[in-house]
Image (cartoon, rainbow, N blue to C red; front, side, top):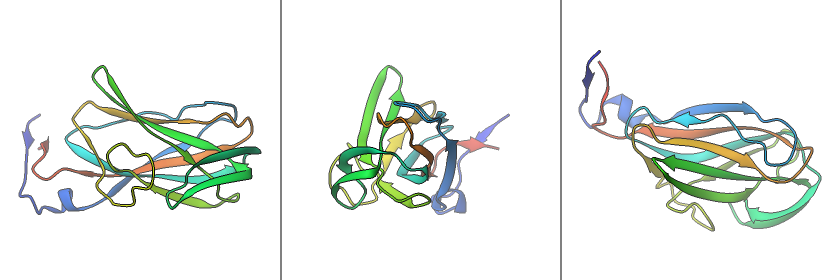
Length: 156
């Protein structure tokens, strides 16, 4: 199999794509499946829908502001693994009501009030997954929004 790169404005490089991780299991610190970058790409945001709301009180960035929530609370932390280096993004507060949706933009360190869509760079082979907080009952359905970098190699 060969590889190729296309013009910088090819639709492959312009489109944003989502990858769903599915529902996590209830229980403290459960982890999602891992996403692997197959070529140079950027992850722009974490998406989460509360399938079963938590009961803990949490404080964290929810994509818009730092919030303290009770009765819907759960935290989620993103982990990028690149070779032997691990970068942490979050923890983020998931404080939506049951069935509620949250989009949390990632930018550089991913912590705090970043609201720009700069994204986090990934090289081929880097992985990304998320770990839930300590709430024992919450179940989240999560995913990411990503794009392939312009001129990145893809299969021919």
